[in-house]
Image (cartoon, rainbow, N blue to C red; front, side, top):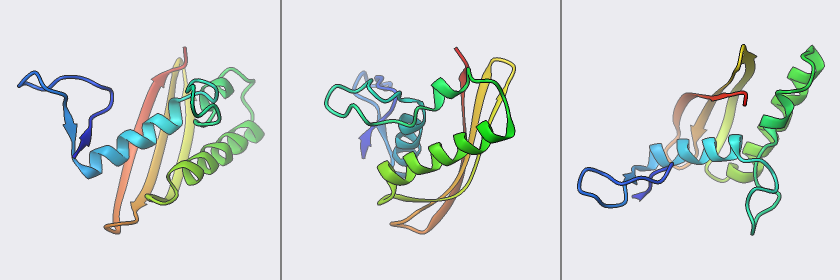
Amino acid sequence: MSIDYPYHFDGRRRTAAADDVDHVRDLIEQVLFTQPGERVNRPDFGSGLLQLTFAPLSDELAAATEFLVRAALEHWLGQLISVDELSVSAVDATLRVSVGYTIRRTDERRSDTFTRPAS
């Protein structure tokens, strides 16, 4: 078991735990929405995804964003997952990232969608 993200307490007033599948999902979310420079001891950690949401929309930007996100996931989580599918979209004030991936240790295919307000 791992510590659940975001950090919170469970019903017993103890640190909430996450099973392996939920932990991998939490790690993906952290890579996606952490800005490089946010972590003191790992200034290059993250994807830079949030800063791209303010650029003018174009097909080139969408392709660059998906490439950037895929590269960050493979760099930081490549030992844990294999990214099979990736889709990034910004609709109104919401950023939506859909990731299809395989957990390498169990060969389990998963698909999760992550959303964040654009700011």
